[in-house]
Length: 317
Image (cartoon, rainbow, N blue to C red; front, side, top):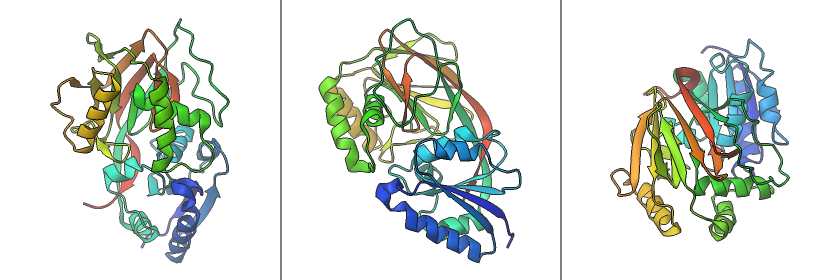
């Protein structure tokens, strides 16, 4: 067995606070296999990004023990996202990347993945906020600021604007401690109470804009761990699949969610799919945007994809 120098960046409160013992067990297993393992545990937002920015050249695998948010922090901290192969131990709430690429969930399974997995290069997606003359609502104090305009923010799985992003915005401003699936109930209810149907316009690869009330830009078929929105999206396809939901009433959105849960959103009336490598989303009013489950700010926003950039360690098929 090849002995490697590894680093674990872990979020001990991920998954409802159950991550720490799993991180400790993974560390024990990897050291028992002869690997040199360095462990860093986050205590606040921004830690994972800062530590990822300081990864030495001799680290052969960077293990992210956390959810999609922790992985996104790491991805955006890396000086070169194409250099160090990433391994995820999924201990978050949705764990979309793990579901999409069929990662093991147990410490032993992740240790085996480190030892026997192969490197797959997936597409790198990036989003950038665009200047707007419409003033955005003043954000409430939060643990971490949204990315600044004109800076490209990396992501792997999904970006969206509309109702779901409004829920993420609410969580960003009001979250305290653990979340979990049930932790979304109050933010969803608060969002319903303040919701007004937005009008968004998305232009893909320079084509004429398509109008809708909610837009999902997918690099993976899985959405939020529970739904399938973009059936044909693949992380190594070299293109994004964009889902535009024209209807924006709460009743319509519930119908879309139920169809996505049953994997039957494709072909549904009021839903349009288009593929491309770059796009812009605009709106006459500030509409929330989320990236990989984290609040990103407000439209307008620009998105681009670069094929086959990020090395991910995946199970042998």
